[in-house]
Amino acid sequence: MTQHRIALIPGDGIGAEVLPPACAVLDLVGKRHGLTFGYDEFDWSCARYLNEGAMMPADGLDRIRRHDAILLGAVGWPCVPDHVSLWGLLIPIRRLFRQYVNLRPITVLDGVPSPLRHAASGAVDFVVVRENVEGEYSEIGGRLNRGFPEEMAVQEAVFTRAGVSRVLDHAFRLAASRRGGITSATKSNGIVHTMPFWDELVAEYAARYPEVDCGQEHIDALVAKIVLDPGRFDVIVGSNLFGDILSDLAAAVAGSIGIAPAANLNPEGEFPSMFEPVHGSAPDIAGQGIANPIGAIWSASMMLDHLGHPEAAGEVMAAVRTVLADTAVRTPDLGGTASTDDFTRAVLDALP
Image (tube, rainbow, N blue to C red; front, side):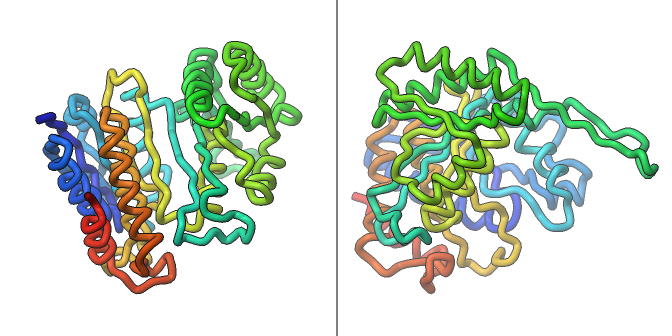
């Protein structure tokens, strides 16, 4: 029997509604594979910020650093500025725990039609690999002359050889294990220092992985090509900002941001990795019991794979695919009337 200790951070809005389905699926598939999961829940959220002045306690990261993994629901609420919630919780976790790879698989699933008429099930299957801890989302910069006509704001992008190299290494190895194609998102025709540096490192890694077909696209052209021909892509690697934008666009191409998962990986396993659905806290439907749990369940499947249980991970996604392909059970975001619990029960019933 293998035991895993999981830190649960439901967060805000529908985050608290989608984590229980993910845990129920983990517990059931775990029985089949000799796995048990212990959950420690933490109330770190915008509600905590409003009550106590901080998204999490000062020793929060020490409380979860020895867990095997972190499952996050969603973070954000209208009365708390987004930069407060993000920099008060997600970014500290990602940076202190060296979660430098953000991994987002994009698949058009049978039973979830893409808004693109030519993006059929089975024809779109790629992964966005996003650098997750530096790049455009640095802490370097500031504000000057606040409130005066000459007020200014400066935000520095930081690209290091170590930071770019490690995410490229992960992306190229992933491409080599898949269909052997990688596309680098760049903008070196307009961003004169960081993007040519990125391109140079991509070229270095392309030489190290001759079996991988490597190309590059300027970000403005790339977003158009993802819409026009999403089936052409295998692995897309980009900086923090470019990867962030591309992965949400790609999730929409796949049919709904409600189904999209994400992994924040520390590939070396020195620290826990964090897994989360992409959909956000969705205040407009919070508390109604209609949130789509697929993103959280898929994120739990990615967590299983990361923890060394690929067969169990595959069974979870096979169950989700079966429900979507063979039944009419759908939450409202997918055009159905099923509740979160209805869809979760269908997935549980589909598990072997």
